[in-house]
Image 1 (spheres, rainbow, N blue to C red):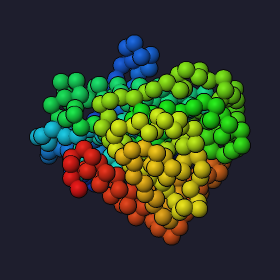
Image 2 (image 1 turned 120 degrees about the horizontal axis):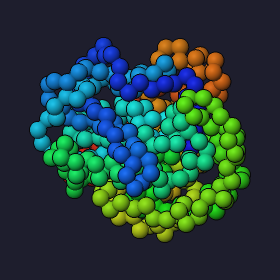
Image 3 (image 1 turned 180 degrees about the vertical axis):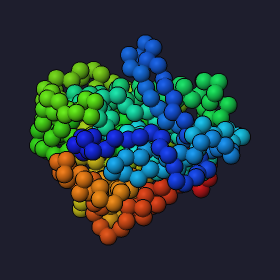
Length: 355
């Protein structure tokens, strides 16, 4: 479960930019005020749209390609299943726009927040393992889309799914009912010194796109009760988990008690998938778990397609991870096509009842 932190110095996601293409998907940005929860949320919503709205490009940056949509387009008539998204650490929900766009075209309303404290340009190691905050973020997005007069007529509140990537996959695990064990996670980081574990040990974070010094994270100092609590939201009826973080830390009994379909997807070949996200065992423990691996890919393949020259730009700002390189000879567009097919088939089957 890597954290894409150095990328923040080169990647400034622009939620909406001047377009060069059109799309059949509407998009809006919404703000969910903190209230009693203590943190405002900015979320992006993609939805099936009728003609109208301002053509725009979602998620443009110096590194990543963006996706076309229509800003504030009128929604197409009907009620649609809702899929909430949870992004990876150091990323943003706009980086999942390629998937969100495909789902909206297929008849889903798709919404995801930028999780405060773990987004590009505002990411702190101490915030990263607080999955109870991330699951609360998703529950608040569900609250908003199923009760707000602007959205409730568009969303079928009885058909809610979740899709998450990396630590977002861990977030999706938890909102589906999985519970992680703190000592198991800390022990994993005692012996594994890459990705999330390296992030906790580096002593740096990002605030306002600038690197700042922070205390190293002692995982065993985290509030154990909060870390191990149940974050189940029973409104969620299906989960898609792509390279889910904390894969070695979940309580087995909690996995056996999950009552909804769980679609696990790993990026890579059997001998290349990192142990921290390897999900075949998780799938075998959940009663309705299925598993697939996308060969010729790696963890970074789930990020958007890179622009020409992006790899060189990232190297110039000190990024050591191969953000723009995929494992095999497949293009990222081809990998995305397979991932989209797997996610879409799972959600159509579990939320729309289509085989």
